[in-house]
Amino acid sequence: MAQARNFRYADDFKQSIVALYQSGRSANSLSKEYGVSVSTLTKWINNTGTQTIGDKVFTNAEVKQVLKENARLKEELDILKRAAVLLAKR
Image (cartoon, rainbow, N blue to C red; front, side):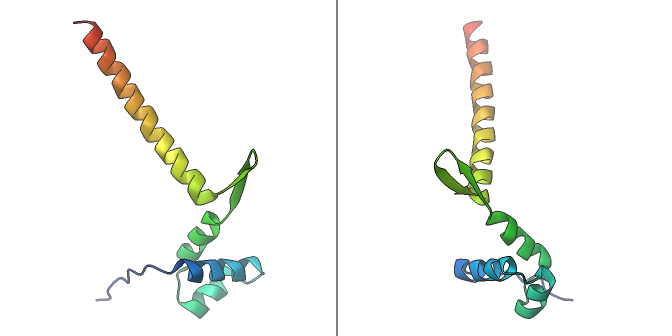
């Protein structure tokens, strides 16, 4: 039975792999050369993109985190609104 490897790669390693991909190397060749799965490489590549909002530049990972937090806060606000309605009825 093979054990699944659970590694945490260093940020500089991730950035160097993404830089190699952006210079023209394929994800498959990088996967074979460095022993990182193609799906992991794809995730790193997708997270390194940037978006400009106004005069600020955000990474895709930061945008994703903000969207997740926004959804959580909206849910909390909805719960508080329901509680306020219930308390107002009393």
